Image 1 (cartoon, one colour):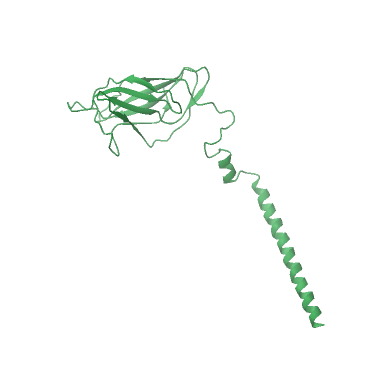
Image 2 (tube, rainbow, N blue to C red):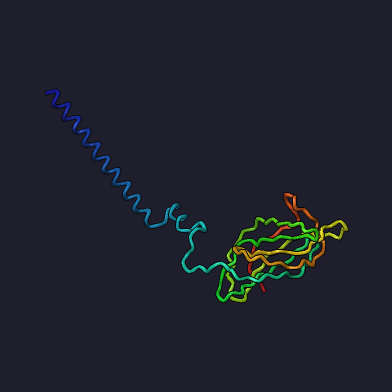
Length: 194
């Protein structure tokens, strides 16, 4: 008699455990179902909502046909000077420039200097055919006879391999190619105002 009661008690415990397990699965299932109303962090990243791996529908292609020109130095009361590098979409469709142009100064001594980039944020700049964007090159000019004589400026627009070479006519600069924080650097592309 006592043995029968123990077995019945064990069966009851097993039954209660099974019901609890089924309830837990059901609750977990309903929790997962509620997440389908909004993207989870993992699915948002996978879809490109937070990253740049996926291209959103309707987004323009990056500009591949770009003509670069250098402007006149901007007025400055500081030791540094600034000049704009204008990049014009010469293609036939609207495209996007995003990021930093690659910029290299080459001296009369044939020494190349690849400029560092600022920490400024980058933005998409949509360019219709014939429209332009600008990136500012900040440099440290000098009148010292021992200053570095720059011969050319090479510019590679963002996300292209089309390097263009321009004459540098802005005088000597202080060569700081080994400096951690040089006074000559390049900023990101931005919308060309006015």
